[in-house]
Image 1 (cartoon, rainbow over the protein chains, first blue to last red):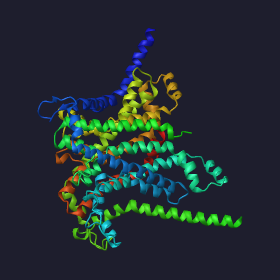
Image 2: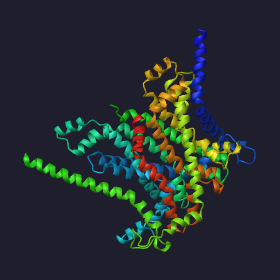
Image 3: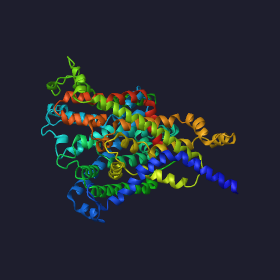
Length: 296
Length: 282
């Protein structure tokens, strides 16, 4: 009895020695800040003067703050633009590339490369290509006889669509790879059987490919949603949240409140709301998973 | 019957043709911004937006590429980024693989709760706790240091999760047999597990490498001193400082892409496999 307990303790110690290097850093620099952010949201603090406990005041102010409403609206606008369009684009790319295609690997790498390319470089080249007065895109549209050329990232109406387009362009190759892997997992005999039954390609796509891909689609939707709520870099470099507040999203609001206005408590309150939104959407998606995702 | 067969073959050929056409058009859409970048980086400022557009400048202005190094300390930025990338990736690999071994192959008290703690933080966006994290770092006297960036990126839950998923698939009998032979846990990790874990290590290395090299928000928040800036932050500063010098901006942007380009095209197999495996595992 004594020896086993000794051995368990010894075993525990060894196990924790494996965990320690990561666990220590993880607890101090991830867990503690996460817990801390909930307390911070209840404080009023500029970082210099002593923090003041204000209860839920930050949240009450938040919901009356027009800037917060605009940021929330913009975030949802962005998410609702990016998620479905990226999903469709990446699925289409994967289906195109799934057949016996010559140069398949080269195509795949080309589509994937923008995903690993640095955001700053991509954002700045997009801004130049879409420059309202000098850029080649508007030059092309002008040569095609388009009047009322869009102002792209410099116009209030077009800034968000421009950012959404850039995001899709950059990200679709990544999700394409996930779909490609899933497509490879669909057994060929399903298509052969459908072929014998006289089902055309279009019908095969909707009756076999789409249902068989639902686990991958679930994963892609989850990743896309979470990543879209986190958007910051691209917007910071392309539009700086503007023009006006046209592309001011929630993370931009968190950044501004904390590092420009030094309202740490208020910025944490926005962060908590962002977290709550992401959490609720994630839970709802998991709830709905059983309804449309089929694991076979 | 024969005719029908012939017709369906013609349809197939037309379908193939359409697929290639679409693929080439899409590939062009993905490449053109980069080609435009190269071409603009080799022009005089006044020619960048001149039409008709010259894809290959008749007299390339190579000097743009030497000018950027003197206009901003890009060499320092590059060295800083390489240093951070190297240290963070190394720490990430070692600590993740070490911790993942305990989660996958050992039994100990508190295992489930700890693992749950790890997993649940993967779903928490960093942006949610970046402010309290920054405040903490500042209290530790670490604002405006590379150490802050290292500490906040080296111990990711994602890395532990990724490695653990792979280690679970290694047969436990292998580990048990080694234990019976009297090998201790550290020996098993070093001599059996690590040599087997090249695939997840390659995946984690690539993800971390690209993430750290391209990270913008971390350095934006933490780094103020010019001599500590990373390439992304430096590039952003350069863009705002020389906002009208399009050719130089393009040259600098291109330089910032080259390392990622080289790593990507030499290791693309691992990229593709890595992404595909994270998708399937879930």
